[in-house]
Length: 267
Figure: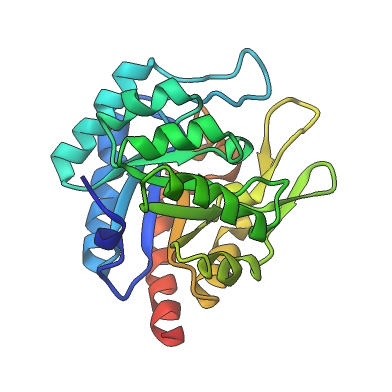
């Protein structure tokens, strides 16, 4: 299983990228294959991302997944096929042990980042635990979430900035929070695409501003973020979850090339 040291063995940022949710095996393998080729060429440590289930949806009729075990087996196949670590979200303490059988990193959704039983269950698996900062929390408050995992016996913690609630239907990234959270001694990831969500739309479907993905990513790399998180899809317009703020897969390579140049400049 991957460790945080494996992700930081390069002078580059590391990348967590993939579809919002696993829609099927062929789609997951195609996306992984393309991203692996790009990241190998650019020497970017890569983690394939895919949620096996979407538990937090605006409407009851929203797509939530193809079945937990089926999606987790697909994540395991991506790992085996391409030799890259994989990450997925968990939503309740009993899911931690189940998901840990298939993945390297357990991700704690932002709305659940204060749930002690969930954090402790994730810690006890020994997997890397990536905690997304709640939209309702200051960066400084994330020290306590990280401490719960560490005090449960697992030092393998990452923190992810994904924007702070601003008004009723928008988020804003405070880049001061990146070095503030890095001071806790854990790698900090910038979730570029979720930071551009526009939640709570009257349609019940989350909106987004994908035209600003490059802007947010460039700013994050410029201030020295350790990793980037970006959801990407072959055709975001038909994606079954979060298509409004995902990056088109065809745009990923050029964007990463530009981000690597910024990383080299700031180092």
